[in-house]
Image (cartoon, rainbow, N blue to C red):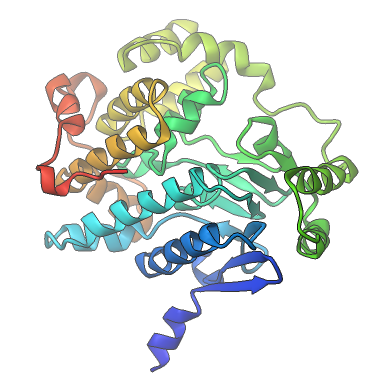
Length: 360
């Protein structure tokens, strides 16, 4: 009974008057998302959406460290080693939830106070409002573990403006605090000391319209002065990012960084050379194609990618090196971008057997 109770408490869902409140409740695991949580959140979100008396849904994390640090990739690799269908269920059901958030007919307000990566991005970025604080740490670090920026990364990253999304996806660069809002990932910035008051004011609204929610969020945003005088951390390098990360092929980006030769460019090149070559090649093509797709079509494409990564080697090696043994020395196969076969990259995007496809 203890384990069942613990599982039930991993995510808390409450109805407060005409509002739905979701609390991710795994603070020791940085509120990381597992399949049982997805299976609790999705049906509740659909019930609230169909209930004409529900005016908004707020989602937050327990504790002061994380909103949601990602999905349970260690469990996925363990299942993948034995061809357990869990690897199909997790990605499919997670992406169905991401799409439900992205198509929700009522306001979805994510309070992304703390670490927000991977699966946590999927629970927030497709919603109407994302409120960052000075504790927010956003990244899509998947190329470092032999994966790709999923949960709709192919859709939202290329829409951040210029080549910022490609840079973030390939390098795993971490955005902090107000910079998460300046990059376009968050819609508002509110100091963490004010988040509980913001939540209370939202919950106290009576039959709110969109403008009422906008007004409260904007009020708290404008009242938050922390780091307001600092420029966006990547502003000094945006011209370089837009120029050097514009190559159609990953080899073009590497060559541009090498030619540039500046300290910053050399540092970026060194970072990229640590990532999975296969992951980076697939990721670049994912974002190029995702830029032209709807969220639904992108998630269907990403589901194919997820299943190909589970079938390949680098994902297991990356999780081993970064998350399990933590020696930070993954042995990628192949070891360089120049040895990654283009046909192999295209294979990642190829159709799955019809009964295994994701249909949104």
